[in-house]
Length: 135
Ligand code: ZN
Image (cartoon, rainbow, N blue to C red):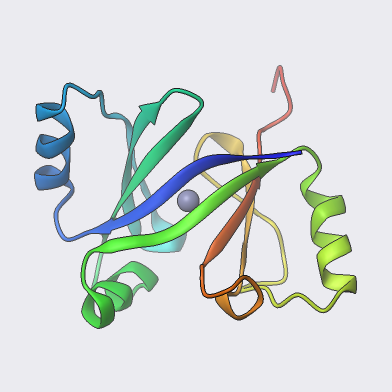
């Protein structure tokens, strides 16, 4: 089974985006910098899923290049799966193209990997799995 974990939105300014969601009466949590992705992010919890706001740390980063090319907007959709390893293996056997071959550890210890838009109908798709309970 899979559910929508979050929608990743590229923004020029995290501060401006935060004030928009605040005005809507929504909470912004977990602001942090993820150096290896060149990004500063914040989460807007929405029931079982969330919006992930992404601000580039520099122009020469994935989000920086996205903003230069496409402007602000929806960057990726993230699906939470029960067994990320098994899902990735199954997709690889079927010839699915991934952005990187290995599964990475992200914010809060969750595991994630990106599927290339050429395999998903034009959407950058993040597959993620929650960290094991109690760790
Ligand atoms: Zn994400």
